[in-house]
Image (tube, rainbow, N blue to C red; front, side, top):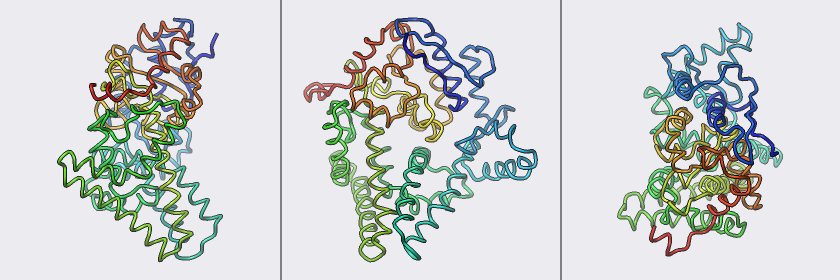
Amino acid sequence: MDQPIAIDPYSTLPDQLVLRELLQNSEGQGEYSVAIVFTKLTTGVESTPETIQKLHALNDPSHAAFDPTVFQFWETHHLRVQLPAIVRKYLLEPYIAWAQGAARFPTDVVMVTHLLLYLTTSIPSAIWLHCYHFTWVHGLLHWVLHVWYTGTYTLMKHQYIHLNGILAPSYRWVDWLFPYILDPLLGHTWHSYYYHHVKHHHVEGNGPDDLSSTMWYDRDSPLDFACYVGRFFFLIWLELPLYFWRRGKRAYAVQAAFWELSNYLFLYLLWRYGNARAAFCVFFLPLLTLRLGLMAGNWGQHAFVDPQDPTSDFRSSITLIDVSSNRFCFNDGYHTSHHLHPRRHWRDHPQALLKDRSRYTDEQALVFCNIDYLMLTIRLLRKDYEYIAKCMVPIGTLQTAMTLQERVAMLRERTRRFPVHCMRRK
């Protein structure tokens, strides 16, 4: 008997509710049976409509069960129970009340929290390294800290570029200014994420003309992955403007080239005329590590593409119900839901999956748990399909009836390179 799928008690409450719903119909079916392990969930079994209603209530400020996200490490309803009354009364609740007024959405107190975190750590540390005293220990620790920050900041920017900001209108000048300051500190080049992700990737949808498409590669090949990353590292500054130019979007072409090249010029000037060692630790290392992370993440997000219908968002992207992608990266695991509705708020993805559950089932969408995109990419490059298959959450009778080896074969088929003539025809 294979190891049963367990619901991680550190998963967010929405993830626990969604995964419980998905596992209910899978218990005891097929060779690879799924046992449901619930920890720290004391409520009884609920029907999907009741779960959807509960997920909606968590996001509804007018509902008694409304639960804004304040910190990523802790659920707010847990803090309200576990913190001393004096801390809740004089620190937690006043902060939530103020931050909800500063955030664009009342659920997104956590984004204000992170802006304050970067204001009090990233910026002072960078100034100290450049202007006062540089040491390699400080410089490398600064870089390590920002590797840890990068996932959260990138997905906060993800919300920012799709919904035109994260702060309330009264803070619009902060909303406009902070990316110019923080983007280079966290490895981003100015506006490149917007032009590449919103104006390009979501238009092409991992199709043959997507510059970050995985379809031209064997997704379990380390050599193909190296070519994929190398192309993005060395050519995206040229390929993206040329893509817009060929599409007749001349303004986008000029803007994308201007912002990318001006950011490189800014980094060169810091290196040449400022503190080169500080520039290396504060700007160059984050740039290199972020770009590797972006490509490794996109590789995992679009690794399993169904050759029967590669243009379907259900069949070219996946859903992860795990701790790191969803707790620390604003529900980034719900990638299929995001491609279906790019402007959907990050807190709405769990209920959207359950509302659309029949379509996910009909389209043979893939759902995994207890594995993040980086580890998925690593397991693919190691060709460890059995491990990935054991993380798969079967939805619908067809997937549930599969044996473990049938799932392995299906996953392997979906990682194969598409022939050029086939992709052009599709």
